[in-house]
Image (tube, rainbow, N blue to C red; front, side, top):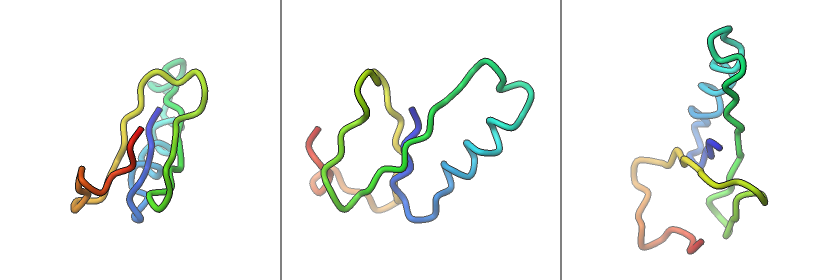
Length: 65
């Protein structure tokens, strides 16, 4: 799962382009529009998440999962 936490939405845009490419067929990556302003949990059954964060993202201010 690819979570997009930054306000640019660059990971979501990349994922949309990637999923349209023939090479990506059969190799799905699910997108997740994460909201950095509130505590969030990945959907049930998800075992791995990659988060695209803003450049100034600080671990000390991140939500606790």
